[in-house]
Length: 417
Ligand SMILES: [Zn+2]
Image (cartoon, rainbow, N blue to C red):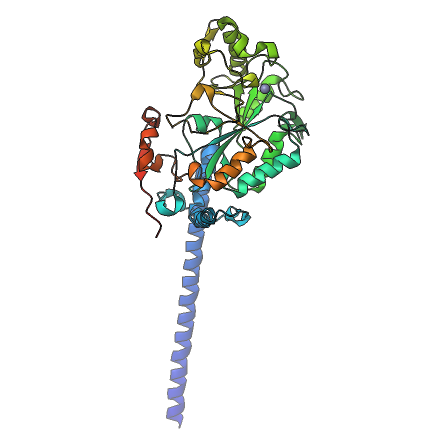
């Protein structure tokens, strides 16, 4: 009995020792897990701070690619929506945001048959003016928000004029770029106000509304181009230089709307010398405000361009000994088709814009309807800015000179069984 007891006691001791040992092991491995977690967090933090070091635009791109995995899911949703042509009001599409620090390094591969990228598809350029109740040129804040909401829910994403002209399109796979422009330098489009000693876009201006919308709609950038005349430029607080610089600093494009908006100064009525002065005055005004800034797009006042023999004075001219160069001249032409600059059917000095309003089938909302019925006509991004993905049959339309070092990728759509 005593023997048995001591044996039991020994056994119990062994068990206790084993328990203590295994507790230690568990504690140790917990620490390891914790350490690993800390290391991972550290790595993510490092990664994030690396990203922060890059300029904000790149940073934004990184954030974008972080959500690529999510986007692929979104694309599937999107395609099924396109297939049945139904209204796509699924806002969940873009509020998915995951922290995946490794995704940015993953090459962007997509299912071509599902995404159906079309990077020679139409990119609409919208012509807005001010915020007031005076359609079709001026619209209210509510109407503007309705436009933005439609764009957001139907896969349109604003891009900068710079990226449009340079064919540097960074829209996520499955989405369609759109270009927002504002003419006339109106104070309801943009003006400054000082809040806590800092200039911000004044509440209720188009730019402030756009910024507010972009903040609450992930993936939707506050990109726009603003075309100014030689006077009355975004009247309000600050100097003209401060206003133009604020816009450029915040990622907006500022373009030329010629020096005078008087009817008698329509470019079609002017001599070559007058044309060059009307373009040159605003060209120098912008360049003096923001040295080294490239101004190479112009919106014709009243949409009227110079007579044909003088049209070349838009692309190149000289005023007071200083030359200017313009790559794109926008009409107020609600005509389409909205070929992108990479398409050899794009007409750079008579590029169309759709009025940002409803009513006329050629207005923006008319085109929204058109693209809903003809989704294959619009630009669909492959998500890779370095690759231009188009259908094989469209190769003849590629302006290969403009392709630069981008890869041209041709593909065929398989027949749906
Ligand atoms: Zn105008």
